[in-house]
Length: 263
Image 1 (cartoon, rainbow, N blue to C red):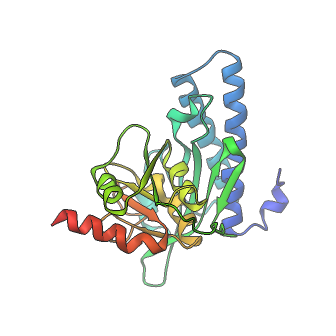
Image 2: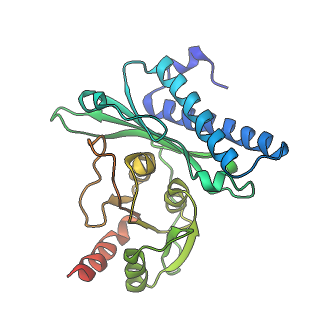
């Protein structure tokens, strides 16, 4: 484990990686312990959410005390809107998958938004941990995607629903389809080269996509809303219902298919 003295020397991306990784380790141990005691379902979900939130907030309070935080597991505060730096976190993304002990498709999201000289701002650092496979992807160093494979594009969608827009893109580009749980797991399947397109519509919040988008951008992937407009973070409304994360060479075709269907 990184000791307190060493943490002082971490840059924001390294600190995000530390937070996501250490939270993930604790979640793996917590799930193992609770399952051994016969706990499943909502007991796992609630315990995982609470423990991850508590650990992340304790670390942020200690090591980044002047920064604001937007978290899925805490009441939002308007103070973040005037802050220069805001950590956007999802302590446990994919609680349903976490509550199913055999599943690996859940994640921890940690991202940092920072105001710029124009008084706007953007994501400047982030990390997504996939604790069940002991992997954390970060903005620094960015992940180097594998070579493009000679196969039809793969589009990843939710386990439980397939957005209309995903069907449109899959048909237009001749995609094969995959299904995974958490938003972080789906986004990282693209970054890792297991899939090529992640398209979501119908409901998400800023914490669902901030860290995955930061990591994907750093690795050279295309990100946007499904209408092609930018993804805006630290907005007053936490609702950010749709996104695209895909290989850069597919972005034009994806957006063209969606634009054509909207006419």
